[in-house]
Length: 430
Ligand SMILES: Cc1ncc(COP(=O)(O)O)c(C=O)c1O
Image 1 (spheres, protein in one colour):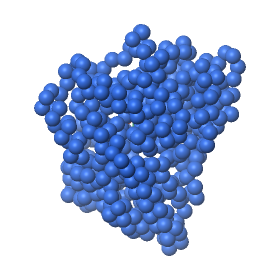
Image 2 (cartoon, protein in one colour):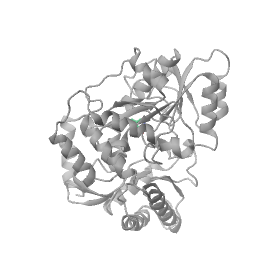
Image 3 (cartoon, protein in one colour):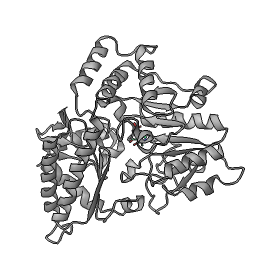
Image 4 (tube, helix red, strand yellow):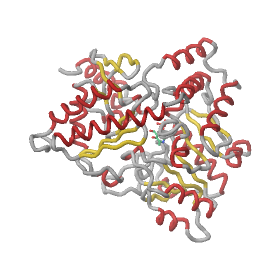
């Protein structure tokens, strides 16, 4: 059996871990979640001894690839010097200074560990800042799994995007959110119209990476900024995927619009658990005025050592130009492979985040993303595994600083062969 060691481990894992995984989304991996022994650079090796070019990158954080020597060195040195004091150390403010220097308009930083936590403290800050409770959230955007934020991400069985996402979620959570289509400025303006609107904040991914890697429509983010200023609403960019990735200063730099708060995680620490809210002093200082922000591991030296190494590597000249070039090569190669086999599908990228949306001519909206042929894509990911390419479900491919031209050429060839293995001679899924 293929992946027999992984399959055995998966069966054993199911006995002690619900569903055999530590994050529910991982259960979507086809043919089943794999188990890995080690990673180095752009490569991963599974427990069956198979080697893969890694485009999962830990679901995004490994922007320097697997076990980058600079990151390993920084974390190892810190580990030998003490793993966590739960007290002040210089990296807390040094890294905060670097984040504020990187992202236009940011004055202060609160450290935490995961994106879900950081989104939660951002919500608490905006409610304290405005005295209002409700917030605008866009369809298809993901701001973590908390009761308050896990709304409007994927349609429920009845097609609705306005209800609960999880069993056990607080039943009144949807009442606190106004869920709107993204890139629809008139809808936002309407929600904020009238003197008595009760909206504290707008949360948005600056580019919708979670549902099709969609860039904002021209003027949309600037329009949100204007509406927030006009109506006393806090603008929050969830830069958990985009931060330090689609530009050093994230979506804020790339699209030239400054939010009041930016939520950061994933790439910032290259794979160690670190998240942050960065923001304007007037909102951030509420954390000294009754807004509770706590956490045993907040600002931990290991994660900040990793962030130090990661930001140093990302700040080197040419990194973001190389991301564009590499992502462009991969995008072109995948497009050509689809066309060569007569297969309908869209491929595009925002910075080093590439999106393949199967079965549709253009991956240009949440609606096209949802209507894509994900069954076929699931079969394709298995054929890619057979050819040494490890990708996420959902069509998103992450590139790191260490994916080189040879990796991309090998990947494009494998992609073509995998496509050929999954379609008939007319390009239809088998
Ligand atoms: C945009 C965005 N926000 C928040 C989160 C939640 O982050 P975490 O998984 O670290 O809790 C994610 C996770 O993928 C994300 O993509």
